[in-house]
Image (cartoon, rainbow, N blue to C red; front, side, top):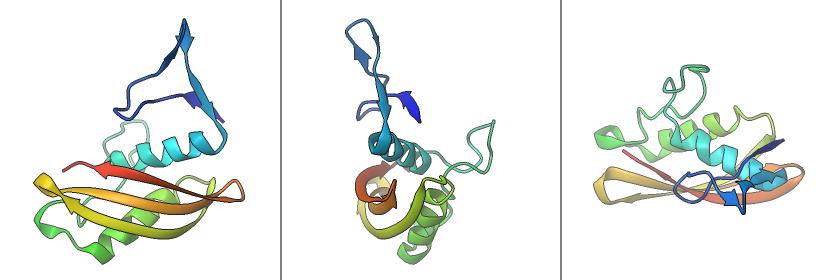
Length: 117
């Protein structure tokens, strides 16, 4: 697939006089990041898309449940064939940094995503 390229703030990147594009494994990593930053039910066109944040953020945080919810969200993208490892770090204001290692396009990739409370 091809998609608009987003920067670390999720803003569209421009390439001279046009919108930059991303494809291949970079596009899959971007899609995973978007999935994990979107709360389930937030996107009106697909209410099943995104992360169930019940045990991921706030007082109800539970690392085992959060890991399961992140795995479930990532597997909604059919290109993600396996989730190998998830490392979670709670940071200021109950935000969560998830470092995920997964298999897509027959290769292992990893990305770090800030999940905001």
